[in-house]
Structures are given as structure tokens and as C-alpha cells.
Length: 293
Image (tube, rainbow, N blue to C red; front, top):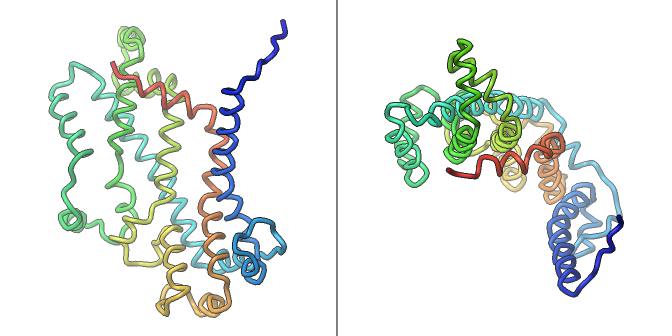
């Protein structure tokens, strides 16, 4: 049976509104992309550069040339992979334990966890704590202090509570312990939630620069985001100790806006490539854990 779609003024307005929002969302990315491939002369002729009139890859050559960029990229990949694994392992284990109503001290621990969402200790006590743990200037300072995000922990707790207890009871009758139940029963049926939270964690780890800026002094351990930030700052400054002579010589001839836009494309491209593979789990995963009993 074929149904004919009826159009009304309200439907037309909704479609126009959605079209407007789509254009507003896509247009900045489009402008960033074409500006990254433009030469300075073409951009300078137009106040708002919309239609590409030139093509140049000099900004990308500037970004990708040299061993410093490769090292920074490798650091970001390492931090993203290890950091996301630590995030998911700690969050899954913590959420599974806190989802059990009979767990001793569960109320006190949940209160302490929620407290961290509202209040923080301040930057100086935070620095002293990291220093006392001997984590300054190490890769672990960009992974362990952010091993758990409270919001994602609560989402996963709510999701684990929604799993029928009969599944765990039947596994315990067969002699399974809590570790076996978590990794062989609970997690395999929680793929949508795990995929969505993994994506959130991976994006956060990939964009890591703040902790590196505070606690990492060795430029060889800089993640990609911090390296690009320093490079963009150094385009207009003379402090270029961590770049090398060749890169410094190129900086004096590079187009700053093109370099900024190219850095935006380089930093968001890996996540954009991963997102389509997780998109089918994304919406379902977030809503599954968002319902509280």
C-alpha cells in the first residue's frame, strides 16, 4: 500500500529550518577545507572565501614534513589507544560493581563520585598531587588522571542495571564468578553502549593537549594537538626551539590561516574516519544508558 505524503505549511517550515541548520553546520567545515587548500593571494581577494579559485597543498606539506610531526602523531595514537583501553576497562569494572545494590559502601562511593562533578580541588593542589605521584613529564599523566569520566560511569551504571538479573543468576548457577560474568555475559550484550562511550573517550584522548601543556616539558612527548597549538603560536613568535631549522625557515613563508585550517583538518580527520563504523551504535548506545530507574 502506497501512502501519499501530504505537505503542509508546518512541514515546509520544519524542512526549511532543518535545511538552514544543515547549511549552518556544514558551511564552516566547507570553508575550513577550501581555505586549507587555498593560496594566500586567492583568499586575500575575497572577504568571505566561498568558491575555490586556487589549489595549493603547501600548508599540508608544512604540517606533515619533518620528524617532529611524525613523533607527535605517534604520541597521539599511543595516548588515544592506551587511554581509551584504560578508560573502558576502569569504567566498565567500576560501573559493574556500583550497579550492584548489595555492594558494601556503594552509597558513600556514589556520593563521592557525584561530588567530583560539582567541585574540584583547584589547579595548584592538582599539580602537587601529580608531582607527588612522579607522573610529571610522563605519558601516564595524559592517561591515568582521566581514567574515568563520571558522566559516562553513571550512564554505564544505569545500563548495567537494565540488564535482566536472570542472566547473571543463571551464569552463577553454572559456577561463573563476577569477572567471568562481566566479560563473557554482560559486556557482549552491551555493545551499543560500549561503542558510544568508546567513541566519546577516543575523541577526548585524541584531542588531549591540556594535561600535556601543564605537566609535560619534553617536546618529544607532545601529542599532536599540543604540537600544532605551539606551531600555530610560533608562526607569529620567535620561540621555535622544538621545531628544527627547516621548519622555522618554512614558517616565515607559510600562510598562517591556511596552516590553521590544515591543522584543523589533520586533527579531526582520524575521528571522522572512525565515526561511520560506530555511528550505527551511537544513538542506541547513548539512549540505552540514559534511562534511570
